[in-house]
Image (cartoon, rainbow, N blue to C red; front, side, top):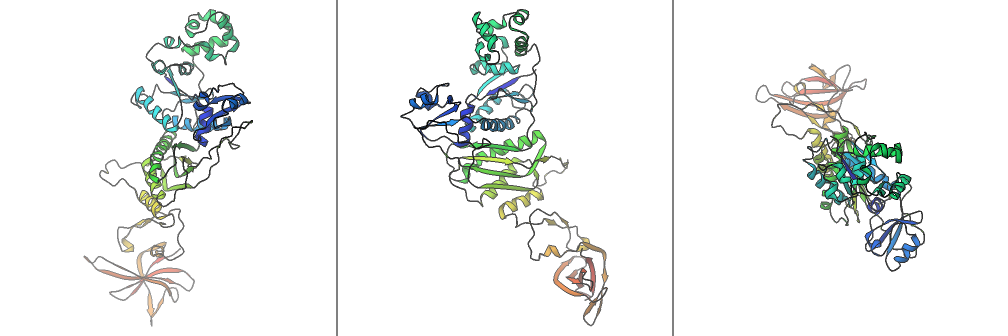
Length: 502
């Protein structure tokens, strides 16, 4: 059975701007639209400011109070709802926007995953408090009913086991006056002002009196007729922001927000079957608005795209392989954060990931019990986060010291190699199956002509327990400028060709 959870953000125009910009201390905030009050905070409300008042009237009421007037920003609200949609996608893959200020989430198929309705609602409450958002909740078998129930008390709105018609009965009809203004006016004139009276009318009489569109809406409300559904498609990027409500003084105060954002991010990756190998942290430093009691025009402080511009440093964290492990990303971020000086005035933290790619799942070893879970790539990621991108350029491992008996695998990373010589760079591209003798006359080595030694020696000694081997390896050059790899056996003093460089 379908069960819809409605999260209605009652103060969305106000809180969308405040979460982007922060609220000055002891300052009343008014959100204006078309020179009238759309919504205000508690400080302004206590001074008598009400929705639909003119801005001049509201400012007259706040003449002795620090206040600021902000123009409503649809773009900022849209950006916040997009962030919340990405977060809600971690609760259920079936969700949709609703009426520009709500999210509708289908939870009937995932209640066991969240350990019941009470645990899910507790998790949502904690998340919204952490984000500084006010929500109203409604739960019902249909989307229309869930939205209507979000306007009543939670003890009624969150009791899906009760009959739907009983929970809808006391709700006033004016809640849907915006959708059906003429129909609601006619019903109210006849004394029908609550849903209990509306639902008592037979469908035939209701259709004849109010028209087929309204009858279809009522049938969708009660579940007699299926509702049109819109499938949410997550974006090809991830962005989420959390605000602290205070200035961050040290790195440790960033850790809870980093862990929470990374948990959301990796849940998003799991649900979308995506992955990434680079993330970016941005420190949010909002510009608080100053009091402007004499202001007569609404003050707009948003940018052209609805997002507040901010200063401050960013922190990019990369991994040699694509990851969706929140703990690993957190460890890499902390290692890199230790090498960075935090800017002052940080009040929020954003996690932004632009480069997402399709996830390919590698098979695990079914019987590899007790092995170290950290792969060689994770080791390199930790070293690079601690020492810097340029400090680690290769990862090599070998099973034998002798070149002809060894297995060398090189995993080149994206860091640039230093210009100086490195011992691992002296290995040839092509190793001969068996060393070939080199002719020597009067101290001069010959192979396709006289050879010139340009680098060496590098001594390799091995197999002392069996047949001792001791060699001095050199890089030599032929008359044709072909670099080759040669060595002298320290026991028989003979020279051999062992490999060719590309």
